Image (tube, rainbow, N blue to C red; front, side, top):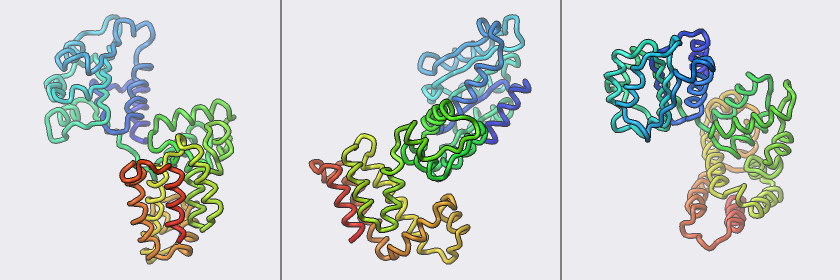
Length: 334
């Protein structure tokens, strides 16, 4: 995120690179940088003759080079944006010849999503010298809640740990999806608001009481009544609560709990660091560890592996999701 801010700041200061090669598994930042260049480098009057968007599936590397070598008309620069450039993965190395001597008046932006070019080959090394290579890495799930907090802080909002966790558990690590939901919240909530689980429930439709976060907490507390209530809600709303997601999250929770049992230093700070969780949630692991000894946790992890296969339809095709979840709770609590 800091690297993205630096790139944007340079563009604002008109410190342009002749080539921006944007690659990696996380498309969110690739889109953001590309859109910023598309919207801000040229004036509206200059864009008509000096800005073009190409698509990897429709052009060759030679076409890109031919367009990049053109001179701008009545402007200092021209902007050439290549979207979905990963469709050119077999021939993209041919761009290295242009990268050795790029047209100084051209700003070439290559959006190479979900893939990376080989850092040992000529194209990467050449662009590193003449332009800029940005790798957009996928965030791990335990990093997304902090990303949400930082994005909101930049817009003068804050968010409670539980609300952030609800978004992560419902939307996963897709930053574009999460950002879309955050933008909806910013439309209806005034600046300075701390976004709460109630705001999430009212505006996004994620239940604050019946979600995977609350199921995990109920299981950790051995609150069987609450856990069964949540599972019933999941069974009644299977599209919004797919079993494969629930099993995956519970597997991660009990794997972390197994790690917790093995820690010598169980101070809150060390636990948060070792398990890579927000300190706000450490007490949940302390409580769960009291209720589930290490041997029991090992058994539950094995059970969850079995149910992960079942949740994907292997060996349980005719069994309704609700029945599988009820059986899972029985195996966990007994």
